[in-house]
Length: 303
Image 1 (cartoon, rainbow, N blue to C red):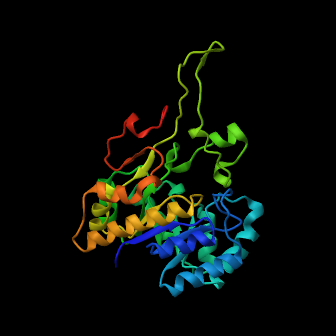
Image 2 (image 1 turned 45 degrees about the horizontal axis):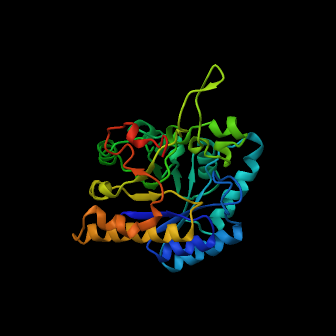
């Protein structure tokens, strides 16, 4: 099977553009139980239309159900999962074992474990697989060698993030937004507080000359796509359900071109693909943890 290119879609229009510009699949969020509450998101009718459109193209739609649920949400989750199965979504993405358990109890839907679960090793993959997970989205804190080792030693589908925003917290486990703005980062309301500009004070006196940020640079894994494909990674995932139509179209086209070139033994140098992205790479980017050598070069600071 050819490695899947999985793109984000914040609304129905972006879903269609992502698929038409080269994505094999998209992931979307519903109006409930999704970690991008500020995105437009999809009603059930929207999801149904998106699934029908994707299936006409022999492509797929995955739905994020990746909140950390409260006890009061259990009935809502059950009804929602059953609704998603009825409209034939190709899978869901979850971070809570509770939602995984409910999906296995009430549906036969394909389940991916979200990067929010911080899966960094084979034992965790075996645990989720034993509970019925079909795919694991690895934590973004892994090197390419660790990804290769994991893929060589499991039959579970493996998905890896290759492009987009990186959380300053370990796989998104952050409460800065909760503290700074009373917006729950693990309930869909992250205010991206790590990207704010900060000052340093000592004894009530500001001591910095420039404001600084504590967020990570964006991820751009162009240099590692061939390694991931050669390793048999099942899905390559781009972040950005709140990004523009121009962004998802351009990034989908770029990675589609790169992936096809790899399979056709016609790969160009990295600059060729960066030129295809053009102005869509609008923030500083790095290869994140993939090289295994993490330094302050991966952090925004004053940029």
